Length: 481
Ligand SMILES: [Zn+2]
Image (cartoon, rainbow, N blue to C red; front, top):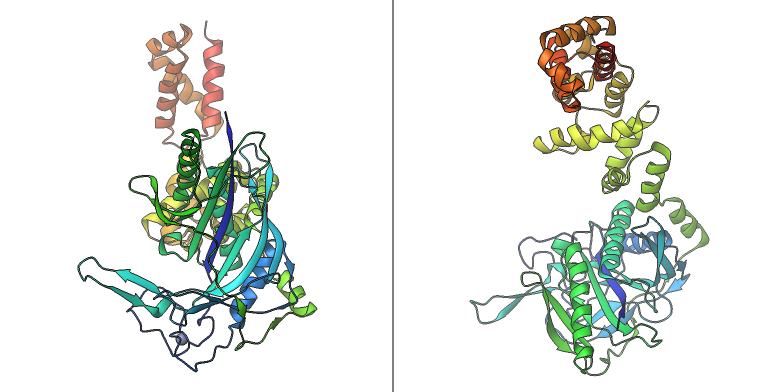
């Protein structure tokens, strides 16, 4: 009996704003506990919230990037529950039919290269909680309210779920992170918890219409954990069903060390949050102009960029995927590749030598002295046969430290590619000096050619074009009896 896996996803992203959601406290990660708090985010009686317009704008732009319909008028609600990290006794969130963004989607790429649409039901704005710190040594817990009321965006996929495997869940989370980074609304750091992905997988027998009971997964602090967690949970649910048991509605935590999910708590009925409209905040209203301006401010999204780099520049799948991981790196590539004779070569140099040199210097390639123009000059010089790839590898090291152009370096060093007419003589000498190697090649050991190529290159001091050497060697060998 085979099973179908379905995965819904709830993702929370802390928004990049200067201040918190409802007060003027600084929004930053870490630091000395309880140093960025005030009466509002500590929930002191009588303190009044005022919403952060920057955060609202971030959610509006994200909703538009995800193809959502925008609620023209939207309000905040109180979600009431008791927990030490929630000082007010309620979280200000958006509940019901009018979140900021409604019914959008995010695309992922299937292994075949097709686009698959993952439908999204809502994008809304709320506030983060404080952080409970459990110290084994103390025998009690402490709370840090620096994170209390940091602006938080929640993005929820639609039902029925479109995600059908752990891999798709990982891809969805990865692509969502890139979209948020491109929009500049979140830093997307899963390891610091500023992006949190919580999948809820369920399984059902093939042919069955009814969806199985879902479980919620938490503590997934990497993309790998998202995939492995969903895969593990689907196997665990299947084992339960095959043992004649039921899948219980519950929350499981991912134990990355052991690679297993661990039961955190069973859900006995839906928790009653007693949602009601937040009386201390005015509604958020968007005008046509605001929505149009936000729409106009959207950048090209990562997946579209990836497919365009492949289509327009002939970049390989793998290279394109690497380039789009950093919007600025992709822009650097495009600036260098535009007008270059060998755009694919530009990508190879960026991801190869430029990345290697930059990593060693602890900078990003686009912050190095190798400007897009300098890089294009280097790759064009190889295309034109002015320098060989081997020489280029030496020149790029100098270009990286000095910022000199390829032409300046060629002039300074007196580099001159050995002309084919001179290479012919070198080829003849290499053949005459190595009759045993020639005999091997003639006997069918074609690999022995490499030795002769090496001899010629050595005499040319690496300044002969590899194409010339190969072609002339083959011609000369063919002429031998
Ligand atoms: Zn505050």
